Length: 377
Image (cartoon, rainbow, N blue to C red; front, side, top):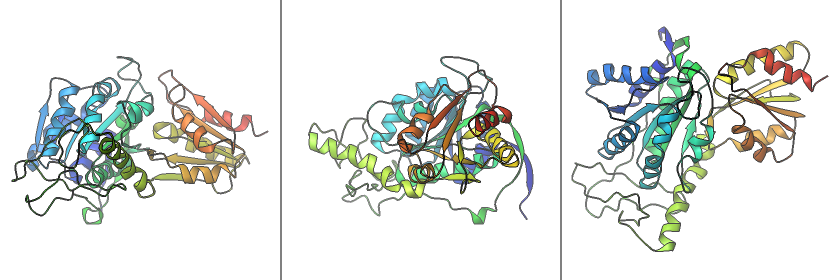
């Protein structure tokens, strides 16, 4: 039988990464993600992996891109300020199609902000932090077990679709401890990138233009190919041809858009017959769950929609729910970021109410409950 453990969220992320096959970690210590680096420094050498403490976050993401190019499964971990420094190379990983995983344990900002305090202010940065149109997948765990599960999923997605994947945790999720029963290893699906059969005739960026993913050969194994942040053709070498560059960007975006039904992950509670829908993610969703249950006990038909995949956003299931509810409440530990995506998707089918909090404290269930009850009398 699987063993029950008392585990911290950051510990669960690390264990999930190791289970997925992590063999290279480069990072710079930053609160509240530091435990991930500490644990990787202890555990990776035990399995033949490599840990490097870099001089900064720019060097960290550059190092994991390089490691991934050699065939390693690579990851870094950071928080908001460090994630900001990584944005240029997030774009490099996206256009060069190098699979990497970045864990962002959010804290109060902007700038240095309050390093040990809770916030959820990196939602837009995770999607749009780097410039230009680019693919990215962002997963948001809502408890300690999901830190394990979604980190494995992040590696699987990165490997299968050759995209950077962000695990968007937060200070509360990262530092809280819960009883966790981990699945048996034989029950897990672990995905490895697809490699070409032989070096002869290999074109590193040849793929179906309708969202295809090219085969990825590891450096140092007999393959020689060009990697650049410039727009490039199938050979990997730069191009100034507009039609080729345009087709590249379209394919990069399409490979994630086409896979969205497969990537989509969310949870609901009492949503089938609800009048008031609360949409929350991460630590805010813990309080939202309690508020929904209290509202139900008081006779109000409240429900919960909790996206685990933030980007691409699970549009179809939310749009279907929006056509049946009277109100949607979006509690976030920021001044409004995901709420604007909710408004775009709902498109007027139901009123969307923003519930913001930026005082470094977790939502209390009664605060969300008051919002539920306020419009339900």
